[in-house]
Length: 379
Image 1 (cartoon, rainbow, N blue to C red):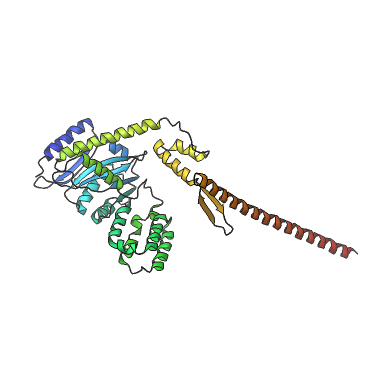
Image 2 (cartoon, rainbow, N blue to C red):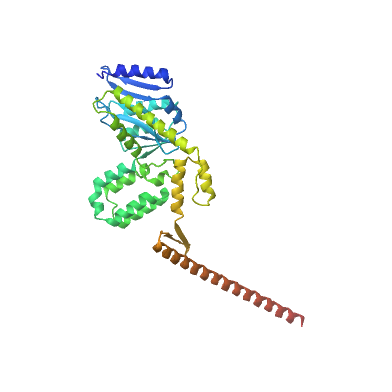
């Protein structure tokens, strides 16, 4: 029997007097033990309407005296800040318990499905998500997949450095599914690993984690469940593995208050957007007016990075991209690139002048020939 359940439920009812939109659902077995418990406060329910673009979900342990898995649901706001969309406890990590938790979440959120969700590779979790969130795109945590792969074929990969480089390049830098498929097939043939079971298994779940398959989906700053893991780590600093569920809930709400204060601080800072722009790009001004200050600074940094390169069109139609490195060595390299570019432009201009001169000569020749022909007919 979970002896503090009556006290926790009584506390929930008291909260509802202050926050009428506070939501909770639970299920107990015959011995008054928790099968499933979920709650979310009123402000989080309202905020979810704005930030249902993407949620992160994972479970954690060592948070309560009953050893129940804890299941926080995490989102991201317009400041790139982790926010809470509710939390639950499960008896175990079976499909039925996950299904019930997700159904309760949907009930709390008025049936509004998340557009995207990222989780680990747990099969029961995946089955429940695909069953309940039928219109949601599910992505698996890239870090967990790579860690598992490292455990299985780490020694093999270590002996094949070129394969490791090709693999990372294909997984991280392919921009479309078609490009990934073509490059993967080339890699398999090049390194003769068509019979490697682990590589075959990984290919079978490529659309669960490879970036190319999610280019048109919104996963802000997310390729892993690190948001959940970071939140879980913070949570564990405030709760005891020997504490009651009521103690956990009170600490959870204190953490919620800290998150709200941080958001208020970000909003206060963002009200004054008197900021010196880095360049003369119109899009930089547009970004400043569109995004919060926190996100703008991230985009501004990316803008700085992409303008730190010299790009030169080569004769074969390809481009040479060289970084502009700061310092004396950089200026020498920059001058070298500039001179090379200038020589290419001069050669191109010379070719154009020669082509124009040849065309003019040909035009004069045809005109003279036509004049002579006309004179012959008149005579």
